Amino acid sequence: MASNIIVKSCSFISDVSCYEVAKDFAGPSLASLSVIVSIIIAFKQLSKQHSNTIKAQREETKRNTRIELFKEVSLLIEQSSAVVREVNSYCNIKKFNPNDVAFLDLEEYLELSQQVNQALLLLVSKIESNEIVHSKLFRTFRYSLQSIVHDVMKLRDDTTSTTCLDKMMDYTYDASCYLGDFQVCLQNLAYGDIFKSKVEAREPIDKSLKVIEDDPLKLDALLNYFKNESNWGVSNAKYEKEALERFSS
Image (cartoon, rainbow, N blue to C red; front, top):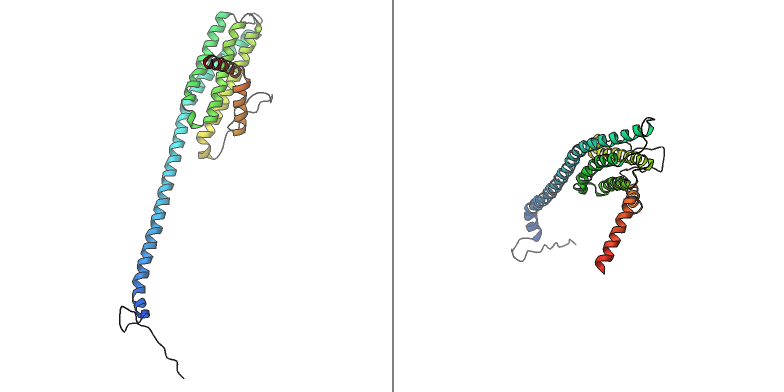
């Protein structure tokens, strides 16, 4: 017995099956859906492309800023280094010249300390005003120079012995090392990504000497040293404590 096939009519269109209606609208509906999906995909791609463009422009701006800052700071470092080396050479000659007295008198000390401190403080000001570029590295370098300036100023109390001359030699040597360290860090920061290479940090034979490197853990250790253990840091902590006690009473 043959089966009776019953095809229901759409309620709103008499004598027309739902299949036929669906078949008639399937083409336009799929086409419309395809257009909508294409628009959504295109919009997402444009949005991603725009985001990538913004990111690329931001990175380019950062790179250009670092390069320009490197050029400006390098010039100051060269100028400061020349002053520091000259003072260090003067002290070395004075110490090892058998025909000269191996100590600095007050007049010599005042002149030499002014030269060193002015050269270093000029850099401190420049670095502090650009600390946002790399706050931890820049702050460490700034603290190292401020520590040197503090120690050089304290030598005024002892200009009648060889101690002043010896320490001036030590401080100017340390300052030269810090200047060189920072120039290496800044050079890597400015050009490392461009040339896919880096300049290695200084490696002193005496491992007790401080070296400024662009390494988070090492920078943290140096910051702690300069802030809490150096003569400058201890002096700052003392004055801050006295000021806090005076204004809180």
